[in-house]
Each structure stands twice: as C-alpha cells, then as structure tokens.
Amino acid sequence: MEAVKEAPKKTEQGKETVKITVCMSLSGVAEGAQDVYNEFEKQLAELKGNAELAEKGGCKMGQVGCRGYCSRDVLVDVYVPGQDRVTYEKVKPEMVTKILNDHVIGGKVFAKAAAKKDYYETLEKQSRVALEFGGRIDPENIDEYIEVGGYEALKKVLKSMKPKEVIEEVKKSGLRGKGGGGFYTGVKWEKAANQKSDEKFIVVNGDEGNPASYMDRSIMEGNPHQVIEGLLIAAYAIQATEGIIYTRSDYSIAVRRLNMALEQCRERGFLGDKIMGSDFSINIRVHEGMEAFIGGESTALLSSIEGNRPFPKAQPPHSTEKGLWGNPTSLNNAETYATVASIIKKGADWYRGMGPENAHGCKTWAIAGNIKYNGLMELDMNTTLGEIVDDYCGGIMKKKKLKVIHVGGVTGGFLPPEKADTKTDYESLIEAGAIMGQASMAAYDHSACIIDLTRFSIGFNEGETCGKCTPCRIGLTLIKNMLDDIAEGRGKMEYLDKLQAMCEEINITSLCGLGETAVKSVLTGLKYFRKEYERHIQDQICDAAMCTGLYRYYVKEEDCVACGACIKPCPTGAITGGTRKVAAHIDMDLCINCNACYQACNFLAIL
Image (cartoon, rainbow, N blue to C red):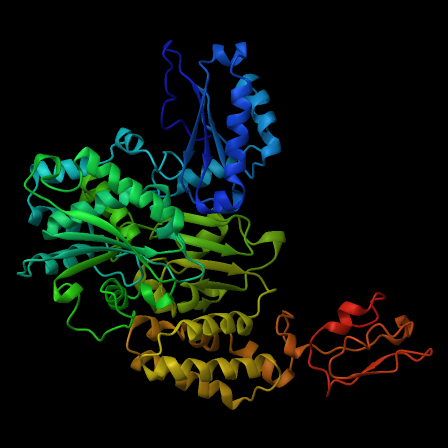
C-alpha cells in the first residue's frame, strides 16, 4: 500500500486523529459523493461519545479533489495514525457504517470495498506532477496546499530570480505545452517577454471541448492553487499586467474553486499589489466561456475573451506578438501551468530526467475503452501505447484481443495493435498518423467498428465547426454523408478515394488547427483499416454489428408462432404473414433497420 503522505491532525489533547476524506470531484459528486460525505458526518456525530473513537483522538472529515480514478468513484481514504492509507472504492452511503465500525473503530479494513494491490501499484508507477496532490489535499483550503510546499516556488522566483532566469530554467527543462500543439513553453514565454508593451496578458486555456478529455477540468477542480501558482510564475517571467483563467461555464465546480482560490490568494498577499513584498503586481480573474469546441482554439479563445464570437484567426501574427486587444499574450493550458512550480522547486534537470530527448517530462492522459481500469493517468512520455493498455490499465477486458487504439479524441486517429509500441510523445504519435491532441486515449476490442467510431468523430467535428472556412463548413458535411452511406449500405468503392482526397484537402486548407486535424480519424482509418471499409461496401457486413443500416433481419419459421406482434410496430409494412398460422416474412427492400420487429418478438424468432 502507498505510504501516508500527510500526517493526521492532532486534537487539543495532543492525540493524532483519524482522518477520512471523500473525493468531491465532478465525477465523485456525480456518483453520490455528497451523500457519502453527509452520511459520514451524520454517523460521526452520533459516535461523538464513543470511547474507542475518543481513544484514537477522534475523527476528522475532509474533502479532496480528483486523483484520476474516476471509474472507481466514490473514493474514500482512511488515514489511521501510524498506518498506511487505505482507499475504499465505489463507496455508497450504506457502506459508511461498515467502514467506521470495522476500520476506524475496530482496526480491521473493510476488505469488500477496499482497493486492491494494483490500485496502489498503478499510482506509484505514474510520474505524477500536475496530479501530484490530487486526492490528497482539500482544493478549497489554501493552508493544505501550503503545507505540502505550495507557493514556495513563487516565493523563490520573486525573492531570488530575475524574469529571464525563470524563462531560462523553463527552457532548460524542455517543458512543452500540454494542450496538444507541444510548443516549447519557455520559448513562448521568451517571445512574449521580449515584446515592448504597456500591457501584457497571461492566459490559462482551461477549455476542453473534446468529449473524451477532462484533464484540465480535473486539475483545476482538484488543486486550483497549483494552476494559479504556475500562472503567477509565468506572469512574473513575462512581466504580465493581467492574468485570465479561461474555462467553460459548465465546469461549475472548477469555476467555484478557482474563484475561491483567487480570493484566498488576495487575502494572503499572493495576488494583487506587491506580491509577497516584491515589486511585482498582478490581478487574475476567471472568464467563463461558451461550451463550444472551437473555444479551445487559441485565437478563438482570445476573441471570446474580447467579447466577440469565437472565430479563429490566421497566424502570424502570433498571440505572443499581438494577442488580447492587440497586446502581447502568452497562453498555455491548465496542466502546463500546474507543472511549472515543481520545475522551479526541483530544478530543470529533474524534469528533463523524464521522457525522450524530444519531449522531456510527462503527460496526463484520459483513458477509456474496453479496458479494466480507466480514468486519468500522468505518465512519462517514454511510455508506449501498449504499456498504457497492458501495464497501467490491466489489458483488454474478458481476455479479448486489442483491435484499435484511438489516440487524440475526436481530432485524433486510429492505430492498429502493430503500432502499440509507439511512444506517447508528440512526434512519435504524429509519425504514426495520430496526434496527442487533448491527450485522450481509448483502447477497443473487436466489438468496435472503425466506421462507427469515425462517424462519431466526424459528426462531432461537423456539429462543432465554427463555419468560418469552407473546408470545415462544407467538407466535413460531405464526408459525414459518405460515411453514413457506407454504414447504411449505400456506399460505393469510389467513395474511399474521394474520402482520402477530401481529407487531405481539408488537412491542408483549413484555417485553424482544429480543422486541420478534424479528419485524422478518416485518414488513419483508411490507412490501417481499409479492409473494414471495403467489407462494409462490398459485403454489406459490419462484423462488429454496430452499423444498424447493414443489419439483415429474417424470421426463423420454426420458432415463429404467428402471433402478429411484429407487424404493428413495423413503420414501412415490410412484414407479411405473421397471423393465421402463417410465419412472418420480412421484405428487406422495404425494411429500414429500425429494429422494432426484433424488440417486439417475444419468441426470439426474428434474427
């Protein structure tokens, strides 16, 4: 088990208290964390006079943020003085009594809900920097962040380093932006610092429109002070005059905790005029943007802050030269800023010790699919896709075989098992045909259909396009229509060459990076899974049975009792017979694959 990282608090009598924490991240709350928390408080109040509990120094309740194991929420940690932390998974209110009686009072772990050995092993194997304190401290309590070394890096920077020295240290570390593009952070800061202007802005991109990504949200929820400290260090480095944290308005927990953290910083003198007694002054505010995928594109994001529609702009000039309201602006995502303080405290060489030569450090991935364990994991960039699936996620479930690894979310690509040795750095993924994107990854077995997965990605991108440039606005719709035809049995072999040509054209001519990568799913699908496309078109078969348009229904006459139940729900009159002892018959020329007859048959006669 993982050793206790923080000691339980002491009571007035000097005895160390038992500490219980509940994960109150968005996923935790969605799974009922508030009810679990309330039940603990209720039962602890009832146990206030319990002699055994009093002998242990009492029990203190607390909340923590996301640690990445969202699929196991609600997560509860129990810290008993002198013992290793014990984590309980998928806790329900009705389990609280057993945890308190068996573990807190009785001293015996409630084994049924306790995390297994591999939970602690997976945590220990990760290279946790941005997620270092996730699940360990209260995100709404600045003192708990300070107790684990929070704001020490800011103090070091303001007291003993010049802005150029900060930039050089970040450049030396090799830190690259963790929002997808992978531009060298120190170089970006240097460009902004070299601009002559009365106003300079520093911005956090906390907008994640990719439906499979939630790293920034979880980091801002789980430890907002870590993001703010990194932002303040960056602001000092470029001598920014104002800081802005841009995030989605539907990230309600993150927004509330960020605003709470900013207010705490002002009260402590970490924000505002002459921070920590230095000559540096800056204010930071939270800007809530729309829930639009395009809002995460850097130029569209800046346009949104200015009060305009989030349309991308052609570059150059880059934002470091001409950003918000025409002033120099440096922008990184929340995870990048959450990494900065550790680099300043531990040194550039420490960070360079992780990852390959072209991508030092680590990256947080949102992992899903037909795997045993999923959630957020922060991993050294030397880690391969195959190692993530097998070593960190427990492999494909039910002993099935890996079919495809989807890397980069809706703007990413599909890689076959043969590419499982691909490292998770920026260039290696691009060379394989995918991208890091917002660093989401899903591993699927043969129950997944490439065409079905591609339709989702293209459909999402088509629906979220800003419409400013023709390649996205029209091209994605044409591609989606062809994919629909293939999935519904109307596809033609010439579509494959047309799809290839159109995607290559969009990749080259789109105005912004989102449009450029919107077609990756099609390009990699055609490159690595072309036979699956051909089978859909030529054989009219979806082996994964995901494309309902290729379903072929027939009636097993010996099982049909001619009850007529299948006739009424058929919207096209495709079923004849089915009454008066005559078995039903389905005319596939009229059938629209609505599945209504299959659902209506109680005798499993329709296949």
